[in-house]
Length: 304
Length: 143
Image 1 (cartoon, rainbow over the protein chains, first blue to last red):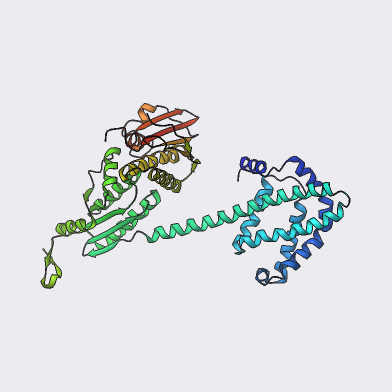
Image 2: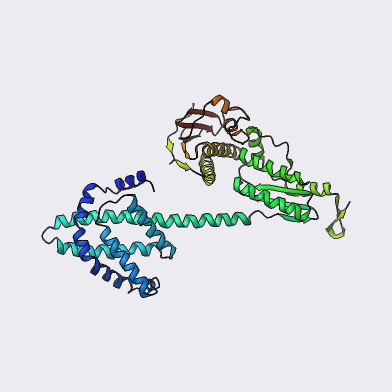
């Protein structure tokens, strides 16, 4: 998060200097009540079966209690700038990491709020308006903390998704050998720089290993071919050619063909055949195979 | 002629390759909603892909926003790509085929221009670039 975003969010939740001043006035109370409030907080927490698993031993419990007390006091110390935000984001990320569900994390605040409310009532006896204002300021700050926790949780989830996408990419470009010296490379999805590099590397290794002479690259599953994608495709084909293999490209949809023509990209260096079946037949012709229909409809290959 | 663009969609931040995909998916969905044909969808999505890639290549990051016009007789989409990058020194040159200050094919901008009905570009060196594309459901440009 940037400074700009933070001040925007503060504006949205209407957190002002007035709130900061009110919270700071609470500081002596917070220090005084930190100990009993946090002790009660954990007593409540640990009364739930599903929560106990997160505190496997005494040391962990003591550690988080200490941290909670620090946080409790911190809420009333003012200076809710970038440093504050970073600390909160980090705490959120830690909770995501130990697989604490976000609903549980956010629910914990309710107990906090109840505890604080009853103590404020006692501390501000006879000054109900003031107590109410202070409580509202605190709620605003807690709201900000909740937003930050959600941010931290979703950021980590996004990272996980990104890593999984990478893994899927690695798996999604199989180079298949269908005849002696004939490979098929079906490409599905987006071809960006990274993937193009990976596809090329994988293809070149396969060409060497299989001593391939013809490769059919099928791009039926590529939704958009812009100049960059076309460029990658041409480079892959060139690299294969340098290893002595011919490439046949198949699966260009009519929409993509029209787009390429309008874009003005020169794909004359590509040997294109309509569909995958046509591409394989063309490859077999180049390699000198003949497919002969046998009796009962079966077919077999004959090396020419 | 066509009605003004009355519907605004929230700008999409363009910061990496994945955002190029999001941008063209979004424009594809919007155009499909307006009843564009499969060919028109592909042309528009590809044009958006080109200008989004330009943002990443030259400015690092920027935004793409969509405005839709679907009340008139001929629905249309306006795509605005903005960045605060280095800007383009010679726009005429940048719109020529095969011109690129990078190692690309240099077809991005001129290519995108050929895929849409209207194309505008404004750029100030040191300030940034704004590219506006418009495409109507029934193309006003001969194929």
